[in-house]
Image (cartoon, rainbow, N blue to C red; front, side, top):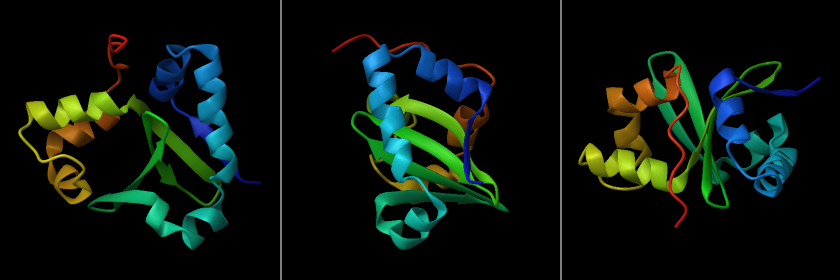
Length: 123
């Protein structure tokens, strides 16, 4: 059975969102099957570090960062796109560069952080 598991951080991030937005994001997970990931690699960003591969999936205004295993997906972070833009701006990295992100230790600290991000102001 293919499972989608949220860690404590991603679960907390989802709980900060309005219920209807949570439902919209969760509906996106219906396409995240092992076959879909293999058949549509162009829909995912890939970040590699040592023996770890992290995928980025864009849905609406959010970026979902996850790892794939034999049993399913482990969701690490569910971040508003402006969270990543802010991270990239603060670290002086060009926008939308998975290759640069994967080499930046601050990105992996963000992914592995035990604390959810502070909710962004509504724009």
